Amino acid sequence: MKQNPVVLIVTSKFGDGHVKVAEAIELAFNNRGFRRVHTIDMLAEVYPRVNEFFRRFYLSGSVLSQEIYGLVYSLTSKMNPGHPLGSWVHSMGKRQVQEILDKIRPDIIIHTFPYLAAAQLIKETGRPVPSFTILKDYVLHGRWLHPHTTKYFLAAESVKPAFLEAGISEEALMVSGIPIRSDFEQLQDREDLFDKYGLSINRRYLLLAAGAYGVLSNIRGLIQSVVDKSDFDVIVVCGNNHKLRTATEDLFGQNNRVHVLGYTDKMHEWMSIASCLLTKAGGITLTEAIAQSLPVLVYRPLPGQEVGNAESLASQGIIDVVNNEDQFIRKLQQLEQRSYREVKQQLMKSFSRKSSSELIVSEVLQVIEARQPVARHTKPRITEGQATTIQGL
Image (cartoon, rainbow, N blue to C red):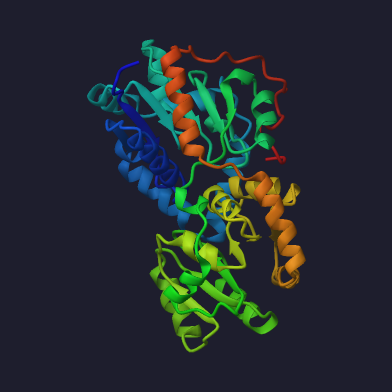
């Protein structure tokens, strides 16, 4: 292995999660003295206009866009590594990707987003560059699979059977957990945080996280339900949705039980203050809450991977999923009971995996040191028409 290998991390700004995973991995390399780390939104570099169109479509939050995305996700979830559609997707923009590879000349490629043209090119050219994939969700979609993958890093043991069914060999799989910032794994001084933000330590707070782009639906109705039908105060994080923040402040600005924020990089502190979290089912946010043992309610998970995340974790009792305001209030009233919160917190502590980014970087470096070849794909234990994802997706 080179003393200072060049690392290419392929990510995307489709949501916030892929970038957060990439940042955690880059930091883990930097902490070990590796400075030649390049994090690139590859699809945006290759197809900037197309990428921006689909990114806006994905983040729009409209019912139509969600339904279309969910349909496409479901139809393509069955792709195995040899599926013609998968091969076509991973071959898009190969000329531009090759130019990037020629410029950077990576010794290691790590994907936090399933645009795998770099892995496809490495396979075709025969260059001995290992390719790794980090899944940021608790469900497998076929787009993440590629035959030139040295190792897949999985969020949890519950995801492994889907990979085995898809024909990925055991030696290519490692359950690492999802990389998150170390801030979420450190114990916070709650009394100091209450003083810092001017909040009462004698109150219980529900943290309502709309996502980095503020796409959780029916936020205003949910806030009103919390105020009217529970003893919780509400901390609302609107992300980068400035219209949502303005509208929420106009409606609840005079209510001392509602506190409205925009985007924040102190989410670990707000999670430490909160008694429970109401959120969308993004893999990163759920992992951050689990690391903090913060009970979670997921409201109307979006079609696609978020439904998979929600169903997988709910089936293990780790989070609760609600699909209407009546269910939401009933669960919220349960969470007012300390005994119920403690059960959820204990399940989260047992499930959580610490220091995932350091574990992944250690494994990558060990693989490189050993010059391990691409892991073999076994014959899939599925027939045509069967899904390769868990939870029926």
